[in-house]
Image (cartoon, rainbow, N blue to C red; front, side, top):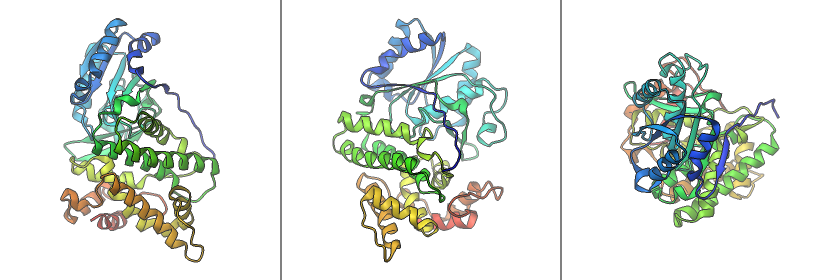
Length: 391
């Protein structure tokens, strides 16, 4: 097990009707002025907007609003939010929504406290020195952004999607009520399931190294997500299934499932180029296409780990005479599950052709300035090879 640091400071309020506590929570911290950030209106349809604003008013918390966060959240909206925070002297950002809205809120909070173009953080050219605090009310089990140190933003002009990590991105508190996910569409539920699995899996199937406790935690998250995902797809209002997915999403991306190992999220990096160029591709859907292709390309470079995954997570039988059969069985079981919950299995389902592969690979390598580490090194050629397997 390698040396590691672990810090997950976000305070969690988990369970039914916890969103109604938001005014008391913010008042307890002593904040006076809130930027209420959310998406395109779904929180108003389900009555959550009224609950939140009533709670803020009852606690005499002043607030301004910025709606419009969307899947693959955009830099232009972030800049609008930064301007509002500075003009209105906001002292906390409250995000009500899923991972996209939360990521948008994170960059708003960082950008408002630093005097530079926020895109420089996403490109790794600047490091934030401070940030406004962030609170979240989660409405979609998926990205784990409610406790993570990461934020992913799309630059619409450049058609680039980039993430960056900073401890300033970790929310001060997050409210997790599984009931708020009951009305999430089957497709978005499935996208979230894939994202939870992939946040865990990309930390699990990685470079060689012993971290047995971490392995077992990751396997528990994976197996629980797979089972709860089936139930939630069949019965969207099953509280226990939704609760399992919500908590699994949080654990999958707060750092816990990767402790003691080196890892690099190659599938995420490749998928960012797909959904960065083609905004109609939901992140989870893109990952569902990329993972089986990447796995078939990479499994020979850590056969032992792929076999362990197949046996422990999917209950595949170990073929000691030909371990390759076991490794492939685990990959195929994953791809089959993704398809069963309604996810795409190829880029052609989005009408994305190989004409765009070279541009994606160039962007993914920052036009030759970086090589992605992992089980092997991934340059332009390797990324194009993987994209060809996604066809």
